[in-house]
Length: 361
Image 1: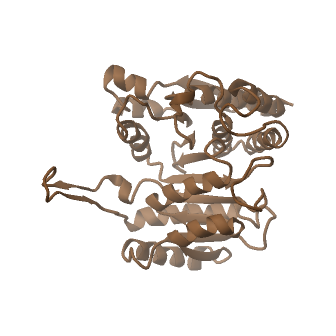
Image 2: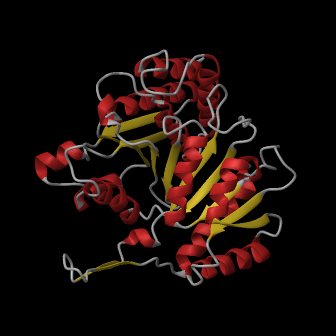
Image 3: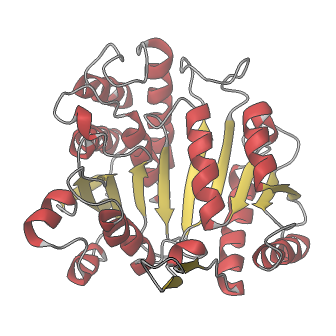
């Protein structure tokens, strides 16, 4: 029987509440599909930082390397200055563990209210592959003459060909295996590059050339397309059904995936993976820690449950992942009144129970 070692980082705010429900569903899937999970909790987050001054120490990174995967709840504490935990835990983990892909499905589930008029589940079903360790997020830059009238701040978008190529190869492979044709929803699988070649004429010229060279040489069966980032945002609202798989750099990926999340019903249903295809990956709900709902039992756990689904699929447990997605579809389509905290018609734990029971059935 296969066994997986899972590091669980519940984090801050409502993170522990939604993580408990995700773990509940993972255990139900393990029992149903005949594999084992060994779980270990790690307390990296705001409370630990205020107590010890530590975010994610180097020793913590080394401890995490002993696991097969990581399930994260949420990072963000109201009593800790913004940026400290995000950089000290999330970005440090991504960079130290070389999680160079951020995978963000944008999928509207049945019964979920969509803010886009006339759009339904068949229209909003695509994936964004975001480069996750390069670009403007690496911290290249600084200040000069700080706190004077002549202060200068610089932060540079830096990519090398190796970083671009490995992200593009992952995206082409993903499009080949999971694109619309592969899902029976189209005639071709399409990978589209989202960039800004008309203004960022160095960085996105590199992406554009690498994208076309790789596509022509290694993936001629994949249809290639290109959108400027501003046009991408426009079409995500007007015609989201056009999209299949999108690939983009770090900053643009951060922005467009949050836009995508609101079109699929909000942060309460959006999940993502920080992926090292050759190493240790980390999966998380996209929404924040929502501290105002902490301890009330009203937060929606479905994004965390969907993150757990992605986690199991990354481990090769595809049947378990498919069963979890089917269960979530049933719950959104037939049970919940809303995805909003306090308006679901069920408590956080009850939603977890509904999904776990369907997975086990």
